[in-house]
Image 1: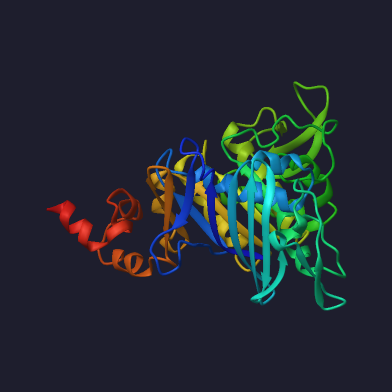
Image 2: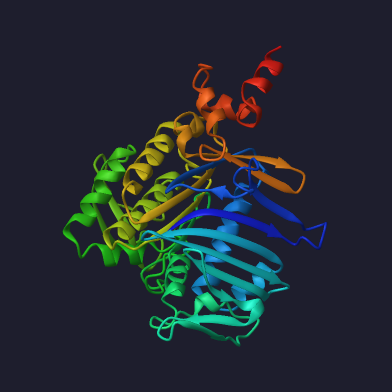
Length: 379
């Protein structure tokens, strides 16, 4: 299932904490349309991480692992549109102080859930019945395969949220003893992903080939004793070195790329439908490796079961990622407005005639007003 569009409003009743993320223009009624592959660009404090977090938190709520994820959302409103095997799912959920006040679901235009009215559709009997549920619970997080199969897709989507904070540790200090089973939700469990994935003969080969694509030449990947920690972890055999390089002594940039690729390859190998969120992609990598990593991620994600949403404010990254994947954020007070090829097609197409590089599309604000603003600024 693919997230096709989203709207998000937070704390509309509190002017000090109010925040809204919406799409540009009126044609799409402020929806932010999304593609299978997305790069969210913008300056610091424009709302890139807020956007990623909004998707992450609603995913956690739909997964239903624990009710604290609902309390963490606080007061907010979400509207989501999904495409699920040819079906369109519309889902709205409102939270007030960590409690659910409304939950509405439509499948191909047919209302299946209206929590405010206390009505839920039962598939086997073909009609709606009264619904009673705790205000601290999300109905869609509790799928009944027979009676509410339309909940299952939402639940699985939430379960498939994987978050990589690329500027973080990405599990650098997670060892064999500290692994907690296969959960890739926070992008910090490369060791368990490797242990599970190496059962397939092609898995290790894929990691070695991917690392070579970004300039890290290795001959092998293994679970081995760590040099400075009395435990086992992930190690690689670099071609130019006689000894192995374990996860604790890899360079920061190398380990970030390695951890992400181990987990990404496992998700693809296991064909786990996932929405992968990567904040600050390329952070800590040099220009060439950052570019190569993003090219590799895009290539691997195409025609797969995963959706990618990445963020960056790196001009070199922007210059080398096609505008077709861009979502440019303009911050206006307590609102983030997102422009992309779907909701601003003419502006994106016009930019090709300027002869400028991709970063200038962002830096000159061409994405907002096109030639009109560009000409005024040049004059």
